[in-house]
Length: 55
Image (cartoon, rainbow, N blue to C red; front, side, top):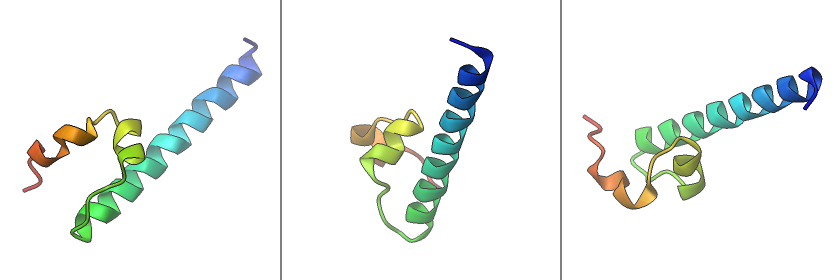
């Protein structure tokens, strides 16, 4: 993999994680459950999400 390709891959992944974190935070703030896709992106098992302490 070239340095340019690796850089694009890093930034693309960083943007995806930031977007998932923003979407999940907005859902929790609004009293909703985040989408499974966003939870997976953040490394959170959607099945176990209910056990995460949000307080």
